[in-house]
Image (cartoon, rainbow, N blue to C red):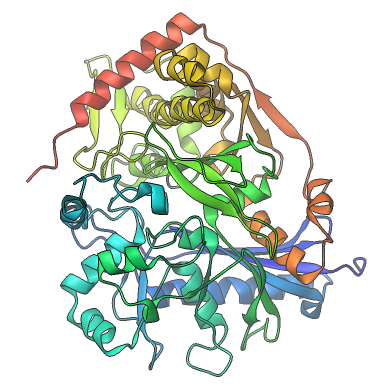
Length: 532
């Protein structure tokens, strides 16, 4: 029999799959399960999920993992709390009176709201996409939930009617799961979100950490459809039924903030990059919001109970690991995602091929919804291996652009204007500003991809032995609220730590910058394609 220890569960509801992990108090995984769910593509640039399919997949992984937990000699009753981490910005709407979804969820990468975002920006006094960024941290973009919700209100009679009658409930995926887990319309059901997810909607005031009346009025959204905004670590409600019935939901974090917590990036200046469907780099900026001059977003990093919130600058890249999936599913170059490593390693370079995977536009730091995917530099010499390597390089070059922007903003945040100017104009000085990048996510398992990343960014890349930092972060938030860990010091010192691998740059500055210049030329070829 395993030693009796408090356990913590964590739901990781991602873009393509749902997972449930159970950790012991040392941070070791004692049970887990994963299940993919269908992706819905109604037309080019549109991406949807069925909220009920998401919920069914979460139920299934909880059932499977708890069965395995018992087989492994543990007891479900020893799970003291459950945390939730989720794909952010994805917008779910349902009827409060029935608990039933009113539309498929509109996924974070969905680009249907481009005309809405443009029209909203044009209505502001400055006619600028960044007009409200000092207030909410975000520009007008198809990426964020308020734009998606505005599209639904304008295009779905069911959503508009529920909104007018006061029956509409809106939330990101964390809100939907907390609502479903606590019984939907049953007594005790909760409609909540945490500050990290709320900060991705355009509706949260970054100073007050509450819904902003100015933003609600501008978007034409009633406050009674919104979830209550809570911290990232507290007891929100109790699971109504199933294997986890009676266990508190005690932690909620958006997936990228959860990875920041799982990487223990609690100090100002700590940086992590997660390689999932997209790539998401966060820089902890401390207890005050810092605003970007270089195309990055200001977001809430975490807030544990009554402790002050921490903030972050974020660079979001829409297509990271999804580019590998494109080679597998659309082009048939590989049978499984991991095959890209051997194929890309079979050639020493890309043979001059550059792949810009701007399938739904480009996010940070360029913010070009008009961009579309492009492959340039093809010759008769080019092979699938060159394209495979170019795909890994595309992820690295996109991340490099975020690294440069983040370093420039970090210098500016320190009130060193000269250093900020240098960082913006000199790739070498900007790279020196970030001593290391902590990485996680599926693509981070690839040694080749991480070496390519170190070469492209010109900085050390540090990969922990345990890469599931997103789900670990949700577990840490829940365990803190439930008393499994006493404080952040207990979480920081040893929980889930088991060593790391370090990748250092193997190319010189001249070669790096010459290749980066060609990447930038390739990006220019991808622009101005999706235009009216």
